[in-house]
Length: 162
Image 1 (cartoon, one colour):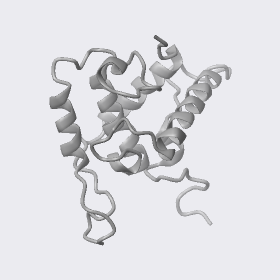
Image 2: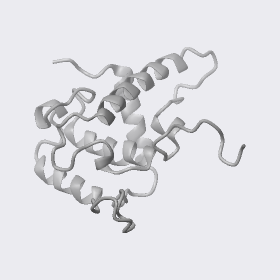
Image 3: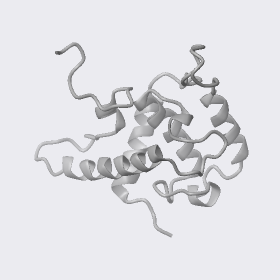
Image 4: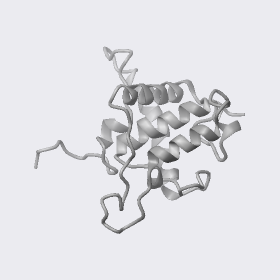
């Protein structure tokens, strides 16, 4: 069994901890939530709550023994993976579960899941490199929010600038 690299584990821990310090996650509004008719309303908070009930008693087991098709979160406790998804990734990109996942078929691969896995690897590599910069503090970290700032497309300029 391949385990999560120490740097990637540290990054996921920091993503979750920093996000958990923000306001508690509420039901994520996904397309259609405002009644625009583009897609049925999907309640991410309810889906995560259902998943928490499904994994009850196995929250501390390695994710790959609880969930199917775990590639990035090997060795991370299953309950922690839900926290990372809900409080980290969803908030960092301003999306809900069905941005990357097919509702109820969480293990099915999608193009967005593939991209997310690659972005996670890139972020882990950047976190190794950032600590090679002389004078940078031990708590320096790069995560999804660093670039995405609550949007699906990474920010290319500062808000309010032209």
